[in-house]
Amino acid sequence: MTTSVVGLLIVAAVTVTMHAPRAWAKNPEPVDAENLARDTAKIDPATGARLWRELAERGVANAQYELGFAHRFGRGVPRDPSAAAEWIAKAAEQGHLEAMIDLVGFYQRGAGVQRSEAEAVRWARRAAERGSARAQNQLAYMYERGLGVTIDLAEAARWYRLAAEQGEPNAQFQLGFLYANGRGVTRDETEAAEWCRKAAERGHAQAEYTLGTLYFFGRGVPQDYQRAVEWFARAADQAIVEAQFQMAQMLESGQGVDRDDTQAAVWLERAAKQAHPTAQARLAARYAAGRGVARNIARAVEWYQRAAEQGVLAAQLALGNVFFLGTDGIPVDRAAAATWYRLAAMQGNVDAQTILGWMFDRGAGVARDIPEALVWYRRAAERGSIATQLELAYLYLDASAATYDPHAAALWATRAAQQGSAEGQFMIGVLTATGLGTATDLPDAVAWLDKAARQGFPEAKIVLDGLCDAIPPACAALPLTTR
Image 1 (cartoon, rainbow, N blue to C red):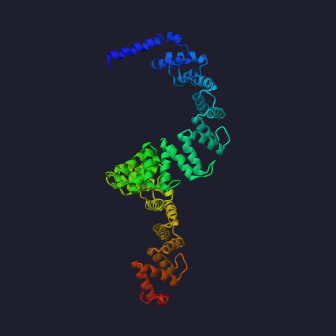
Image 2 (tube, helix red, strand yellow; image 1 turned 90 degrees about the vertical axis):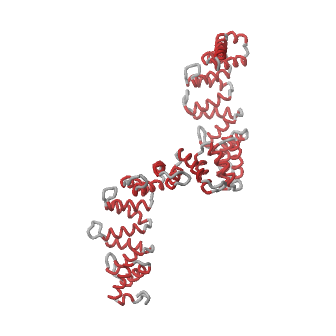
Image 3 (cartoon, rainbow, N blue to C red; image 1 turned 180 degrees about the horizontal axis):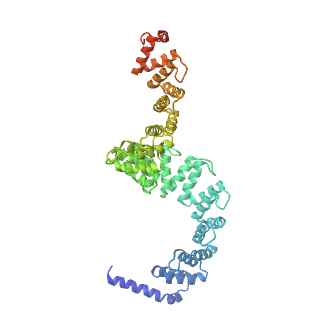
């Protein structure tokens, strides 16, 4: 900007400020005075506020509102919530719609006034009855949530509809939600989709995502993956995190769009940066595998950790594995592995429970603690882990340990055997043959040993042959091919 232009602007500003009272006298009409105050406030907020005050004290509703606005944000006057509320209330009492709506917020938050849901409702109702779509939407929400009024979903739907018919996008979206769930209206998925579409077409981000979901599942509209992608993309561009994650899903699977791992990773990263836990875990897995991004284990660990801290079980287990084994510059850290395995184990993951039991059993990364090992082994074993059932059986068979319990060993060996484990079948076969932890039953022992042998367990064949040679009647029921 040239010096001459700047000079002209300064002269104009000074002229308006110096001659404002004279201009006021020549323009006594409120509308002209309001225009002067408004124009002056843009150049000199303090003088503008003084002009607004003169008009406000003369009872001009819009000036009262503008003066309240100035006090609210400290424009030309000290910031003063109480003064803001006082002047805006004066304007509202004269029927100023924007003032009424602002008062709703003041009373809801207790800004410059004592917090009062009842007063918030009163002003919302006055503005709504004057036809304000924004106030109608506010009043509907109050009836839906029971804020200052008794919950009345039918009344909420009525006010949402009035606002929605005026094109208020949030009211359109909320009315669609009521229809989708049959709240205050008869459930109607087609009507729900129609109102959701109207809100989405006006740029309501959550409505865009919801409409994409409706197309994805074919609810209220024909199932159409391409249309779903279109609406997911619009919502994703408005930073709706679930839409960003859904875009990644669609690009991964090729539903409604060409499969594109690189773009899928882009959307996953956007969602991950907004703390979407599953997106963080999926992005970590991509960095670990080099899928759609350059392989980078350090970045994988970083994203796994963020997801794991939000409770994503798969991420906790993955971190446990990374630190347990060490890989690509990540050193082995059994203590860290135990921390993450414990979190996954506490969520019921059998693999984590098994490994954590083993770590306490062996003292790997944690102090050796057999009772603690038994706790985790049992949890995994009770969920059907054959490997853990066998570990328990061996622990209980250690005659030198305080945990020695042949009966418990036989119990867990049987559980593993019944699930088809050849090692479990061999173990219970031997225990049954010797009467250790269970009653001696040679035919039963032979049957278990035979099952293990048929699965190729070599020790079972050796024991079975020795048993049949020593006590031929015990093997009488076996086929000749086995003997």
